[in-house]
Image (cartoon, rainbow over all chains, first blue to last red):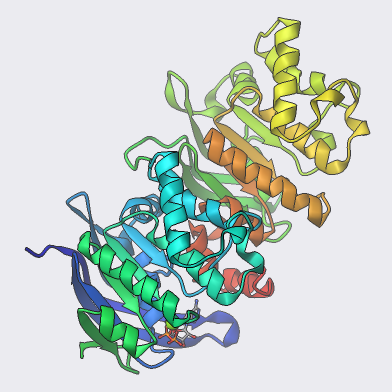
Length: 235
Length: 261
Ligand SMILES: Nc1ncnc2c1ncn2[C@@H]1O[C@H](COP(=O)(O)OP(=O)(O)OP(=O)(O)O)[C@@H](O)[C@H]1O
Ligand SMILES: [Mg+2]
């Protein structure tokens, strides 16, 4: 049984750089996309074509000029492109998870607490949340001496794994992954691929950008390509 | 958080001028319980005027400032009697100034500064007031042993924490803050920001924070308003406004901070 959870229709996105003489950069051009629970859709394409931009639009981090981005929450479709800030915050809390390309750390908050935060916000009991955080950190091979430290001084790969643990801590039905394995060694790439498979088994629709063809072919159930005109097509 | 609930504060068509200078033009926004809104913009853009108009300290020329008063619902604070408005300010609201000395009373002890708001709302038992004051000193990471010292005996950062304790002791639902970290050294700012972030998560108190520091907005606020020349030029989710700014002025602000936010 399949169940649609994302419906993107006729999405356009451009940037206008007002302080660079008002130059306008058209990025996404009439993008449409449906995603079902349990599938992993890989977004492929050359650098700068708007892959990250697409994920950020879905997360409500970037605004959308035209088109709709509907996400199902509690049997109701909410259009991120037209949603209020409060609705977007609600979607992020319980419906859409996002692992950004770079960890944006909250200064001075220890790694362990960063991972706990989304679980506690979702009402998961402290003991269970701590157990899940420890499990993720172990599976991602973060040495326990780092758990209580703020990640500001961590290496790129360590920060990326904290970001991944944060994104996978609670199960939300949509998960956006922006190059989650770009700075990881093969052991940790395997761990992330396993986490993605487990999420799919729980019915999560994963939308990801994977620079590494091997990872992409291993986890994706479907591959879509964005071309230089910002158009999205099945590959 | 529940999308169906009522706003705590609803501002509509708010205008305020000083002579021919327009400080706030047609400002409108809503604030929900527990939500933190940052108001950013350059100095002179009308941020503090807006704050004072919604905090009951400066009467707007036009427009409404409705607040969800316990038991009676949304009421325009500027239609209330002076005494009612003052009562709100003492109980349900807090106001944290840029300079802690403007919020504290210099002639009385730290404990009395915190206890004062409790006495204004009718607390009389000296021992209980003192106990609560000491408890609040500890919560803002001040040494409760120093409860009998005058505010002047504390450093600037400690004074600001004392000022915050003084405001939170009555469990307000809404706190107004005007550049709460601007008068402090950078290292002290960080500690105060951590404290504000933790307190807001713990107490679920709503706040309107005026700041010119985008990093403060990024850290504390879910939503922000960008003001320029008395006008709100852009508003939205904090990360949206900072990562995908639409207005030329917001783009200028964001690119001027060298990725500090
Ligand atoms: N906030 C922004 N403001 C202005 N331009 C932006 C912004 N975000 C992205 N862009 C531009 O949009 C284009 C697409 O960027 P995006 O990051 O989506 O590409 P990408 O496909 O993810 O590339 P890569 O594979 O290199 O990560 C780029 O030209 C980028 O400079
Ligand atoms: Mg990218």
